[in-house]
Each structure stands twice: as C-alpha cells, then as structure tokens.
Image 1 (cartoon, rainbow, N blue to C red):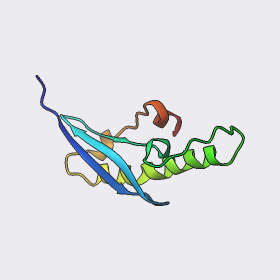
Image 2 (image 1 turned 120 degrees about the vertical axis):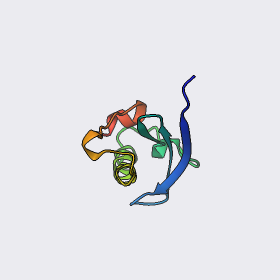
Image 3 (image 1 turned 120 degrees about the horizontal axis):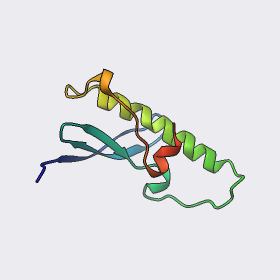
Image 4 (image 1 turned 30 degrees about the horizontal axis):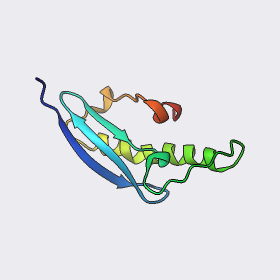
Length: 94
C-alpha cells in the first residue's frame, strides 16, 4: 500500500472569492482545483451564446495562476520539473 498525503486547501482568486483545491504528495506534488462551475452556489446557464460561459473559463484560467505560484513556492517542487495536466473541465484551460 502506498501512503499519500492529501491536503484540503483553498487560495485567493485574483478575480474574486477563494479557489477550493486539493494538494496530494507522494513523490509527486499535484494541485487539483474546483472550477467555478463546481463551486458552492453555482447556477448553471444553458444559454450557449451568452457571455457567462466564456467568463467562467477565463475565471478558471485566472484562478490557476496563483495555484501554480503556490506549488512553485514549495521547497519540494522543482520548477524545472513542473508540468500542467488538465483533467475534465481543467483540460480546456490551456
């Protein structure tokens, strides 16, 4: 069995509010954030041509920047070995 540490964290969004996330470590440090569409209080907008859906995507991209800073500030993260892997909603961000 492999031991993994998981930290339930949040950090300030440059735009508004807080970004809920998880940090997991076991030889690899990873950051998994919740996008704006997964945060408490979100109300879905089904109108595909509205301004809200692009604004939510931009919000997620902006939210990822301080997350990257958070990882790079850790002593156990080597900046030259940092990569981005998007899963589900976050796969569309970069």
